[in-house]
Amino acid sequence: MNDINGSRLSRRLTQLGQIGFMPGEGTTRLPYTPVYDEGRAYVQQCMEQAGLQTSVDAVGNLVGTLPGKGKTICIGSHIDTVPGGGIYDGTYGVLAGIECVQRLRELGYQNRHPIQVVAFTEEEGNVIGGTFGSKAFTGGEIDGAMRPNLALHGLTMEEVNACRRDLTQYQCYLELHIEQGGLLEAEGEYCRHRALPYDGFRLCQSCRQHPHASAG
Figure (cartoon, rainbow, N blue to C red):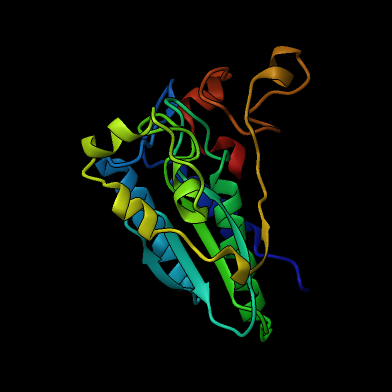
């Protein structure tokens, strides 16, 4: 069987989701806080278990690399949350990327291209500004509204610019993403503790008590 290890992925999603979780509210992991650092350390550990070489850049993006030759295949998303957010938004793309790499290695696959899994920081925009981590990574514009917030977290534009990658050395970027919301539950289609990830805003009673109920 060449399938991913679904139970391992589910367990990691659950464990990361518990970092910053408050019953009845959801999960809150804002960048540049101790709880965010704890979550990033957990994801870094998962990357290293998968055989990835890890590093954290100056703004806090976590990068796991499986060496190879030629242009890089990049997989990623973010691990920060909105206040009272869900356990899948962003984190699913990061942990699923790690799982793919780990499973390929377990199957003896020898990659030709380098493979990177990236956990971008501050994508939700609650601290510095929206998609800040990926903008630093890709050389995107850091607009005037973001700049005053940099100093509040000990960052400079020189450090931001140092995070820029040479995009000509990338083959492609892949992101598996769940944008969580309460629409289906509100319409009475599904109960989140049976079928859907909770989003921290519209929770059934079971999901309010058990952050991992939908991840099993």
